[in-house]
Length: 47
Image 1 (cartoon, helix red, strand yellow):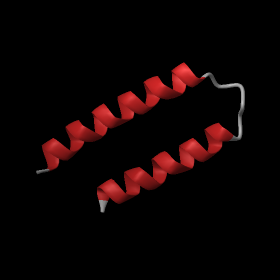
Image 2 (image 1 turned 180 degrees about the vertical axis):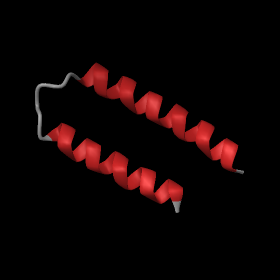
Image 3 (image 1 turned 135 degrees about the vertical axis):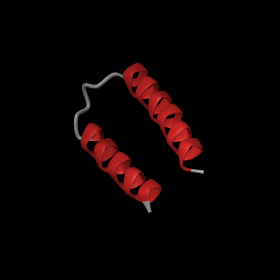
């Protein structure tokens, strides 16, 4: 359930970002990498 909530939040943030065309692609990629890393850590700590 927590993962689902996190994913919903991530999708919400992504939707907001895509409404702002000025954000650079590199920053987007970096954020995605950081998010995946954080999710990996939280999943490992949960199980």
